[in-house]
Image (cartoon, rainbow, N blue to C red; front, side, top):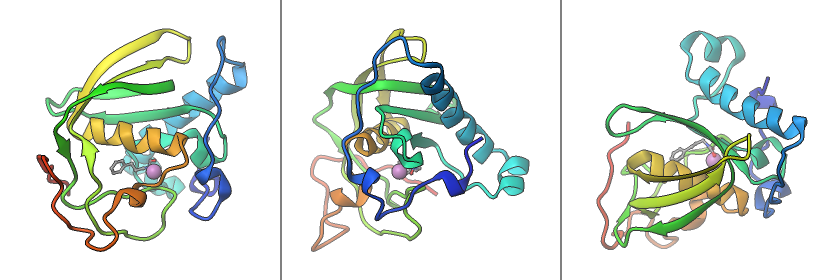
Length: 185
Ligand code: SB7
Ligand code: NI
């Protein structure tokens, strides 16, 4: 199982590397990697298991964060209507997005960043995405709210981008044009 010791932290070059596209069928090892990413999120949100294994709670995790430079990530979180969103995305992409932007009023965090970085992280408010499942099935879905933000955060990891790269350097809380903020915490 994935533990915090397996999560690489800022400064590690893999976090700044563009991850490699996967080809299907996935190898048994790459399938296992995807299952392990999702299992980590589920465990990290379980009060008993997160305490037992000292896991920081996460709603998403990308393969490069455990030093596997492959275009794969997992998300596990409720949507606006309290439906559970839970999937592993392989070779994910954003096919279209809203003109409207959004951001979390309390900013973002990252399992690979052991410090608080304050500031607004501008994101697309709504996105239409495509990805492949671990079995190679193509999925298309529309995301909004925190799931849309999380998808963009994870997709950034596949491109060597960290959330704080998006924060306005001179004024971290500068107005985000054309945006509907989302309250978190
Ligand atoms: C806040 C947190 C996350 C995404 C968007 C807003 C995920 C944090 C965990 N990760 O480091 C995943 O890459
Ligand atoms: Ni992250």
